[in-house]
Image (cartoon, rainbow, N blue to C red):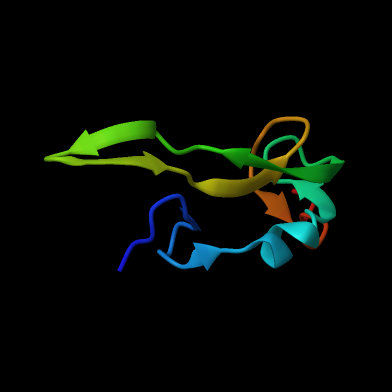
Length: 79
């Protein structure tokens, strides 16, 4: 069941304030390979209507602050 006004992650689980309170971690950017801080962005489509229902699509993703790419927990291999 979907609750009105609730926020869900990409896997369909409800995101609570406790989940977001931890904050994003730092790591390495998968794009530029530099050490970076992570940030949370909303990549959802926003407000939408389906039949008589109106809802907001929110998809919270953790990305790097430099390139908005995936944040790696370990330093990437130098090729």
